[in-house]
Length: 203
Image (cartoon, rainbow, N blue to C red; front, side):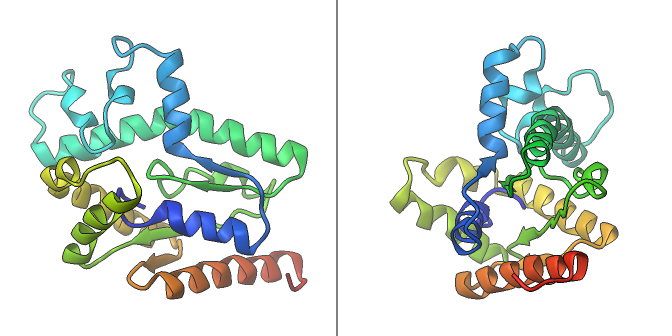
């Protein structure tokens, strides 16, 4: 899901309810990659997901909206290398894992569908005013202020709408995060239903 839709809180709840003690964030994976790859070599990796398009200097004649999406996809492609490594590790160790983050573009986990039970859920906040309010409310529990996010809100919404459309195309479940309790219950239901379907046992 896009920035500010509530991915981290939902992911943390899923790990608690399903007693999964391994949680990976693509923001954390990106931060590790930033220490390993210089800004001069891969500038899009060192920007926010919604600002990465500003560094696509090699693409001429592209509109602002297109640049936002292409920059986001460029960064996501780079981060996908680390995501795949973490999933491969979980498969090798036979452990359950929750991965959350904006960089999980629909289709990114397709290569693992025959090796593990993957449940890819896209979180949205379709109401724009509710989405804006999330940035202000999380100031109370974080050092991040809402100013930068609200300034770039239209770019964030472009990515939000892109992920929503892509999820629909890929047939992935989409959960509109309006009420946290309902979102949590729906996410757990989607996971358990998939496991019952694939494994044939109740969890």
